[in-house]
Image (cartoon, rainbow, N blue to C red; front, side, top):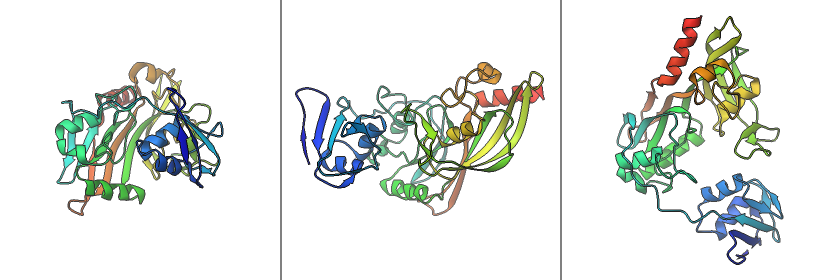
Length: 318
């Protein structure tokens, strides 16, 4: 595999000499980029094979040409920031925090400060040596506007152990979602494949041939406003797989988007206009085995103020 960089253009052109997955082939010849960084470039549509975008898992062949729109040089690594951070559980290897809505889990392009990672580095300086330096200690993530429980590994060994639990699907997560409409049936499992939306690369969608995805759900309570013109449902949801935006995509595909979800729903319903500057999805509880003790740990996060206010309004109207 050989590469050229035309002048000062930010596009790098490679001619492949191996038969492999696209992300692995690029990782082998671009040591300056992490595997996750390469996958992000592919997801963003900044990698083209023979002129066309491909998925990270796509097979590439000798002679294929790859164009890569390289990102600007990364600035210095994330810095510690003394930001409010509620720790719900902590032992020698693990901390579980209550991530507030509106705080990104880790730095990304255009957002290098004010994230959970910045706050964690101030609270637990040793995390700087745990895993990806841009995501130190991060085992999983929550969307920026999603609130609730987030596990953080405090050692390299704990990071590996917890990642193994997520891969084996032995970590149990419970979410609370306030949806538009009265959800029917009242319980079940949504099994619909999810992939990146080919028309809107920042979104996911239910797409035939996507990755298998399953979400178990059950209705907790239903509500109505203005003489039943506006109907809502509080759901308990358990993601059985871990796809990006999974709960939001699945509920929207059923016709019951989460209140306040501008990406997969609408911001025009009454409750969204009154109470939901963000989507009302809360990671309420998580259950896992602590690498420090070998015991099962269950941690719960209190309902955030905005979601509590919306539910109180709905209950008063019943």
